[in-house]
Image 1 (cartoon, rainbow, N blue to C red):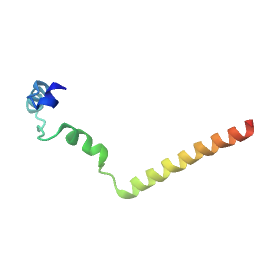
Image 2: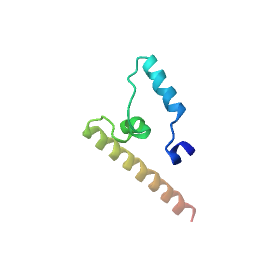
Image 3: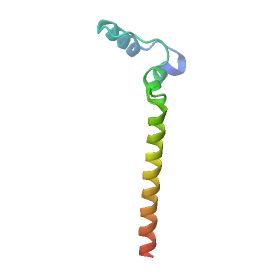
Image 4: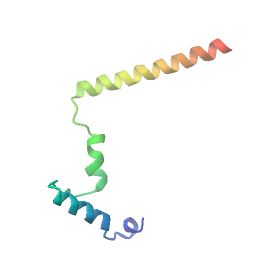
Length: 76
């Protein structure tokens, strides 16, 4: 937290970059979150698959709510 608040040099970042270079992995430059979470937030998946996945999640969600509503009405 101190490193972030005061903008200090982080030894873990230096170690990570050093290990990546030694392992022949190209070291990244830039913010940690953008490097590691960019693929999660902006996946390289065709839009039709993303839409199909979103529709499947919505159908699953609606099915769960319908089942809970049915159980609630059958108890009351």
